[in-house]
Amino acid sequence: MTRIAFIGGGNMARSLIGGLLKTGVAAADIRIAEPQAEAREALARDFGVTTFADNALAINDADVVLLAVKPQVMPAIREGLRDTLQRQRPLLISIAAGVRLDQLERWFGNLPIVRCMPNTPALIGAGATGLCANARVSAPQRAQAQHILDAAGLTRWIDDEALMDTVTGLSGSGPAYFFALVEALEDAATAQGLPRDTARALAVQTCLGAGRMLAESGEAPGELRRRVTSPNGTTQAALESFAGDGLPRIAARAVAAATQRGGELAAALDASSPT
Ligand SMILES: NC(=O)C1=CN([C@@H]2O[C@H](COP(=O)(O)OP(=O)(O)OC[C@H]3O[C@@H](n4cnc5c(N)ncnc54)[C@H](O)[C@@H]3O)[C@@H](O)[C@H]2O)C=CC1
Ligand SMILES: O=C(O)[C@@H]1CCC=N1
Image 1 (cartoon, rainbow, N blue to C red):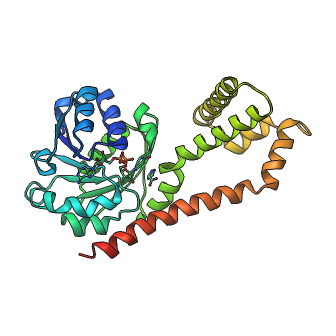
Image 2 (cartoon, rainbow, N blue to C red):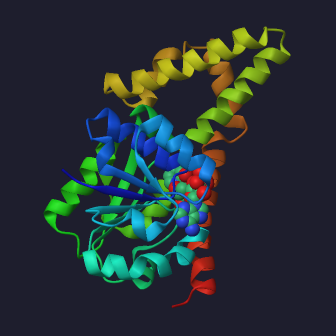
Image 3 (cartoon, rainbow, N blue to C red):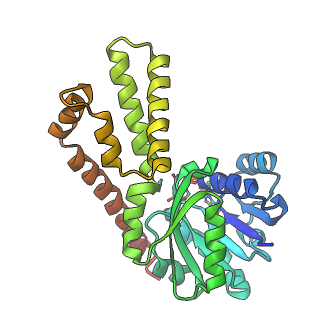
């Protein structure tokens, strides 16, 4: 039995808690610190978990403390947590974009820490998470962290922490890229006269079907793409249009922008909380 305390009960905490409960973790073993009373009530109602307005109270007796606040909020929570963390020495897990292991060690002390980057499909158990551990994380703690994130979907360990911002740019932010593409496809078909609800339904199912084929067929995306593309057919016309507009470059620039922003978030915290 692992007691898990969440600091911050927003979107990602809700996604992760939903996954944990589905895999059989007892609600009694999950505690959440959340400053907003309305959010606390919703968490207790939706998940049956215990909530706290006070961060230090929530982590009392916790084996794992999971930081699920915005990167900018990290320095502000250290005062309230540091003493209890040092006394209990739980496994600390952070899901904050950009925030580095050395920063977490500076703020919260020399603890076993796992930095990870999940994504919102965790809510339905279809998340993707990259994890990276500091040297203090023992093998059982590594397994503990993986077990918690496995409840949200697929997990992959990332040995080189510098690549965690790339993971953020790929899968952390990635669901939004696919949502944006579906929005654009739906708008394009609607502009040609298709009723919006029909355009939405067809675009969403196409996205789901393509995603399932990618996940379940074991085939490379390029091979699946080739099978849709008849010589001189409709798909070829569309793919040539994508290529002409520089789709690979568009994707590379978007991932680079998100990756860079991760580094900027961390640098801003170095500037505002140097010690
Ligand atoms: N939303 C996403 O798709 C993903 C977000 N993340 C990371 O997860 C973290 C949380 O993001 P979201 O859940 O989207 O944000 P959110 O804004 O929905 O949740 C943050 C929660 O922290 C609470 N909070 C604010 N100050 C606090 C304090 N001093 N003590 C305790 N709680 C406090 C807020 O009231 C809020 O409920 C961020 O660091 C983000 O980088 C990581 C992967 C994906
Ligand atoms: O946009 C963000 O900063 C967070 C991190 C990854 C997804 N959402």
